[in-house]
Image (cartoon, rainbow, N blue to C red; front, side, top):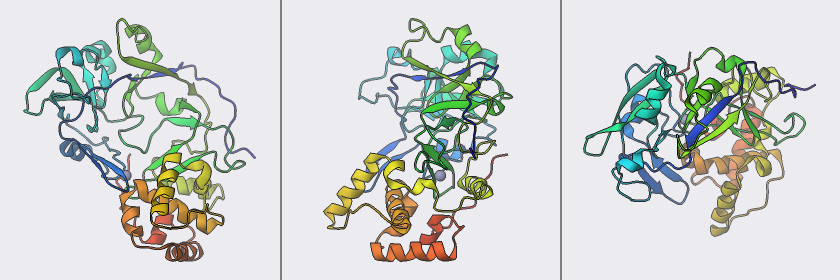
Length: 365
Ligand SMILES: [Zn+2]
């Protein structure tokens, strides 16, 4: 039996549109980029991150209880190390300056959106590294965003090529080991669900841009490059029925996802553990290179235990908590932990099998 509909019926609300900058030249002035052997780390502006209750691992924020606007600080040089001029700012309509976990918006766009930026939005200041006001830009935080800065939870949905119950690996799902927020990929069409957008205004924040209703695109002529140079716009259908494997409303945390899967009779390991299909090639390459350099076996996993161990090793590339926990744990010991975990705590999250307790998370209303 199919778990979700294959029938894409567009809502009478009409489509929405995702708008972002084709080229974002700005960098947060309090951002630090680092690289070490295991992972890239880009630290976000600590004050903004704290104000938005940003998770230190996945960078996902929780803006729902925020009451005051935040101040965003941007560098006086662009990402290509050019001086920022009035002209640079003139087409920075909306986006995340690298390292600022909030949106920055041009006053011209904010003015044109007018009352569509309703009272869920908190609009604040943008300043240069010396604290000088940058008058052309404002900071903009949505307290009910469709998706957040960071890698994880999102109300945007993805349609999949096949039912994952039939085709293991057609969906890849993961979670932040620190906060438990859900992440997914490998969908082939982004869409929004009518019941998840119908009651919440016409402008919603997305990670690096905005989702807007068609009425706004038409009114502001957002399709016209002469009016909005450097703006990239794409159509996002709104469907009446869910076309992905997730519950409604969409789970934002791994524990909700697991509960939903359990209600469908599915237990670990879920299809996400299918290493070959569900994992980005970059992580596999790095895994192989890292192990070759250390003279370790790179044979692809065969058994379920080996797949789980392989997936945990991969996760250590993007989840520092997993990396710390697995440092110094050899393959034999890891397989032993996995076997023990599957046998004795089959329903517990797999990171608990290597001794990671998920932090109690603040829940959204
Ligand atoms: Zn997190």
